[in-house]
View 1 (cartoon, one colour):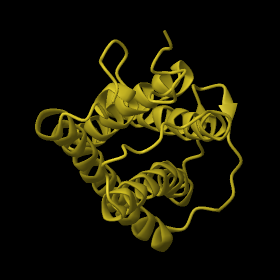
View 2 (cartoon, rainbow, N blue to C red):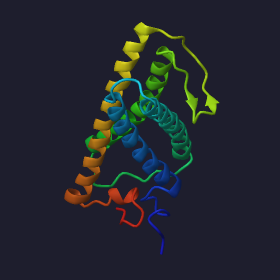
View 3 (cartoon, one colour):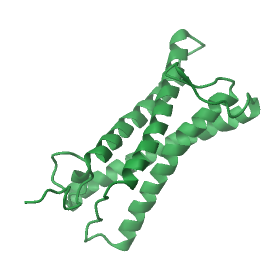
Length: 186
């Protein structure tokens, strides 16, 4: 008897772990970002929140690189046989948009921090290179781009979740089981 993984119907453990770590990290970073900007004034707690948010952003950026390496070196489950070309195209476009925004959001945040005059020191230990100098005009543009791309990413994540649930509840095609251990896949 062969398993769903051996039959290429489910993602391998490395991809599953990175997927769920990134999902948790993205939602945490977004919630943290919404919370911290509403803290009045400049307080030690607010500064800690900004640092933790940056550290999480850099961690998510690194996880994305790991995710790409795992993806390149892993077998990806085939699309279900009953999916049409349009469904496959929409799935590919949705995943491509997720990858673009998973890269864009932390990158824009990093440049926003630099343009604001604040270097990023990952976990207070590893100072990332200062690629641009403090620039108040660029700061405002990067802040807006970071905020809008983060909101776009969360909307895409919500769409991703809704489509996974649609496939599970309405289509009953086992697609959700590809990424959830112990659940039936395809």
